[in-house]
Length: 208
Image (cartoon, rainbow, N blue to C red):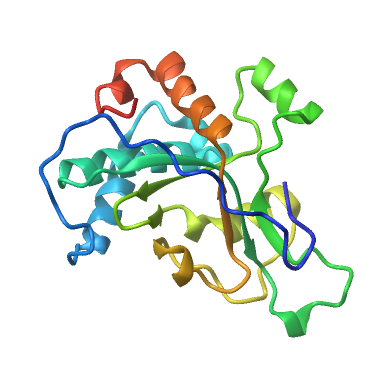
């Protein structure tokens, strides 16, 4: 689950094909009320009675799905991204050379634990977020949960700089040592899972 190197070699993934939904022409670089959109996404996730697993590390699945839904309702062509990500939990000066320096989720479909999770109809180790392909922006409304997840899953604190409540920006605007690596296979898996488990509740938002 956790990347232990200070800077993992996680190259950028392939760009995803454009969404098939037809939307009005917009400029995604125009100012958006990001806080309001974040609050609306959080409200939908928190009020969804079908999200029990979000309390067990599945937050990013529902958060990303609702992020795409809300962004599209605001007229933006948003898409699902999935794969790996990592955020530093300590500052360089705090690293004693032995500690786990980063917290993240690594998409590893060939590993035994991932295969067991998939066979058990559980979510394997993966991170899921939204993206705005026209402007090349990452929209991750679950970053603020990482310190608590580090404590819950690994029993470690987060002595370094705290991640923002959410991240909404380009790759170039990511904090140092933060990496997002989308993967086509991971995206396909997530979208199929949304159809198989939740049916038209998410399909109707034109995610596919």
